[in-house]
Image (cartoon, rainbow, N blue to C red; front, side, top):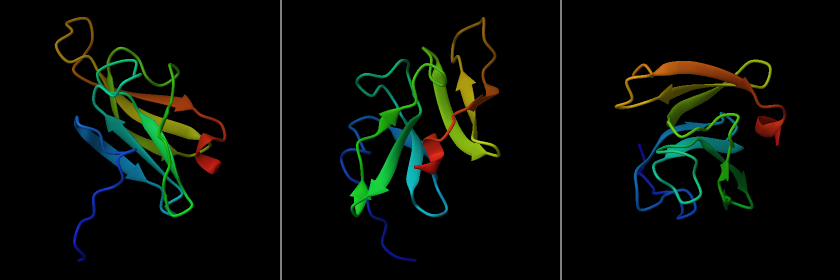
Length: 110
């Protein structure tokens, strides 16, 4: 193994950044930062593309995916669908975690 390298400051924030999925061809990374400025909830799912030798500004996947709950562990599936977990930690109206799927078009084919 090689020495671990921290990704750039566009990806890593002061808060926890986790639940990453990296495309097998390293074209993009999908991850969940916690309480990132401009987010919709406690944890939102973002995508960043690898271009010009580095990871680019992350893009929030918007309200089709993210909510005021905590979304995490996103993985691409067949037919341009994204599978992820949404949790309402501490909210009695929502289970601890449920699995969701959403069609995301060409977002993963950039």
